[in-house]
Image (cartoon, rainbow, N blue to C red; front, side, top):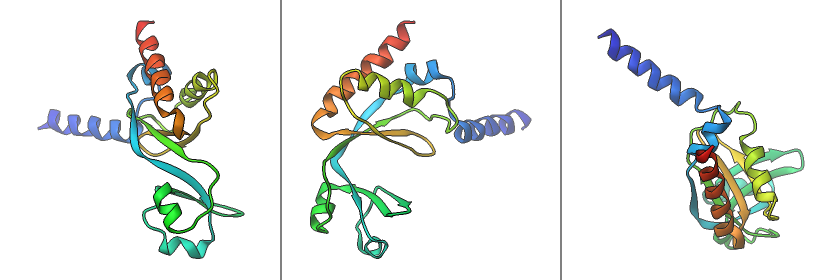
Length: 150
């Protein structure tokens, strides 16, 4: 009985903390493209209640910023300047992990790929220019594979 209880505690602790070791994060990340074309829009607070399925809402002092699909933005006649592809890093990273996003964004910056990163509880997510998603994926896989060789 005691051993089963301890295993449950270990699973719970893992779910809560995630990985914080930079080498392990880079080696074990499994980037995957989330289908869709996304846009960042600045909207009025009153527009939020009618907005269908925003992926993210962040309330800035100037007003809410939302990330929605391009289809939703066009349907709601929201202004946006560019479209983004989404790559999720499928490793449970600790919110206090140091250097993970810095290593990734630096690697993408070497070839001029801009990144808007969003960290959620379990994973980090990268918005990259829509037309460069495949190139970003290739670079991320190269980075992960190079970390395995070390």
